[in-house]
Length: 157
Image (cartoon, rainbow, N blue to C red):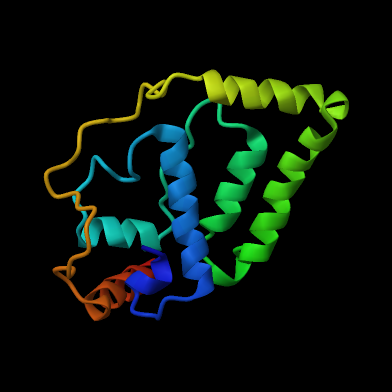
């Protein structure tokens, strides 16, 4: 769930883009993001403070860059769905003219495709008992989350 939604704001196309970034990450790892943590107020606080899943080793740089843009903590900095489409089309368009494929890009794509799932030693593949992947009500309110975040900011001043 996007940080702004956790804080009580409505879903927007930008929050959908954040969700897309989590799908991108799951595609690279083979497991859902934050699979090893309880899906509770502590995780929500961490997400609101900018924590994101660790980038998986051997992920092509162009993919990493798009994923990071899509999960930016500031929703206005995330690309639109049209911008995401344009970026992905640029990745694919070289394949229309196979003889002109950039060798580095070709190498990165093949390395990514052939990389074994779970090749990141720090990646925990067991699910936390309180990691939920179905819709449910959170056991805290966005008001509580905002109060904690504001207290943390106040203490830093």
